Image 1 (cartoon, rainbow, N blue to C red):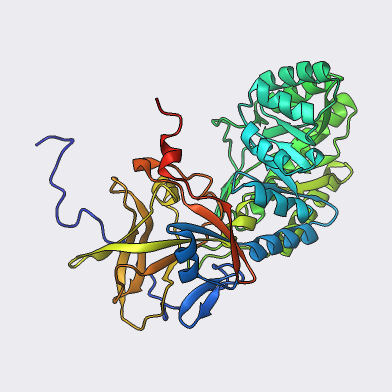
Image 2 (image 1 turned 90 degrees about the vertical axis):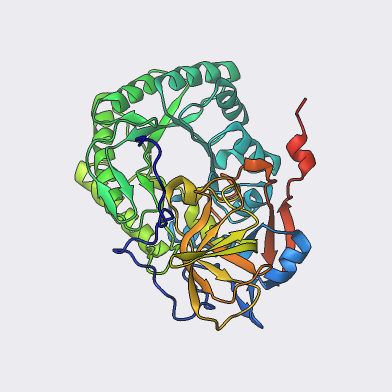
Amino acid sequence: MSRFAHPAGDRHAEVLPEDRPPHVPSDLNTLDPTIWSRTSGRVDGSVTIGGADVRDLVARHGSPLYVVDEEDFRSRCRDYREAFTGGEVHYAGKAFLCREVARWIMDEGLGLDVCSAGELAVALSVGFPPERITMHGNNKSLAELEKAVEVGVGHIVADSFEEIARLGFLADKHGRRPQVMIRVTVGVEAHTHEFIATAHDDQKFGFSLSSGAAAEAARRILALPQLELVGLHSHIGSQITDTAGFEVAARRLATLLVQIKEEHGVVLPELDLGGGYGIPYVDGDVAPDVKEIADSLREIVAKVARSAGLPVPRLTVEPGRAIAGRAGVTLYEVGTIKDVEGLRTYVSVDGGMSDNIRTALYGAEYTARLASRESTAPPMLSRLVGKHCESGDMVVRDLWLPGDLATGDLIAVAGTGAYCRSLANNYNYLPRPAVVAVKAGESRVIVRRETEDDLLRGQA
């Protein structure tokens, strides 16, 4: 028998691991307020978001459909702004960005992190103040750097020696003195509840602290009078639910701050600890309170600065998922339903890995509910799958849905506001769904649905 091909067997689809059985909700109709958007609920059995009935939303805007709860999004902006008084909060645009979201961020007084010329263009197109924009990226092109310098973005986070040289050249060319931060690889990798305080220099981002590259980056920037070095930046992971890893990162950054002070007589005034704050996706997930995060990080930075004999730097944080994640809900229409006897029921919807690749990409978990009606039917173990030509095309790998689920029902998946639309694609030539904002019972399209004409545009 070939070592590459073998019979699949009748259990090839894999039932849930015995050590992690699915939790059967006591009520398949409830919407956990820690997971769903702040205005989500049920009225006459149907899920409503921002006062809008999901049945009406799909009837008007089609399916699949990204729905963004505007009040939820804005309220979380305010939560972060108020919690981090005295510091800076920059929304990480990579989580989800469009022109309307940029307006919300601007209105709520936050800064904005961008990673490309395209994201910068979105921000500038709505008049976002460039001084409140930070430009990130491990491989910024000369054109991207030039645009950032030309418009006067507030900070550019240097990620390579080549980039430092380019910035010096561009600053001379445009007669500007951009404020620069150094992206430091601090040797701390945080994910969910765990962090590993060992070297992680084998990555594409930043300057290694342990190798001395970060200190050399400071030397090169300070040697260029046309650049202003204002601080250090680090990012230790994503879906982080405690601040222990940030304390290790802050202590390691402090050693570099001290070295820069002793070597150059320069005290850097800013410290950016990045983002990555987690949100609950499924029952049992926990996420820290925003105020607790702020209080803890402020205490960490102050304590580290005092112990290093430095003035307390101004703290910047970069929430993305923590603001956008729970504001988003994706609606699907149920199509084919297949019962695999003794295993589970496969529930196919009209989208999949083209509108949410996170499950296939890195095993993301989600909560989903029958949204167009309530049901008292017994629960059935299900797998919510898409319509793409991949066996890994799953939206929710394992969940319980009502046993009377039928073709035409609507399914709502919570917590899809971050990285789903940003990572959306046209696999199998599926047009990307529309994004609608809902508020006070009204809905409006903020990103239109793609058409077949869009898919064909640009082809010979």
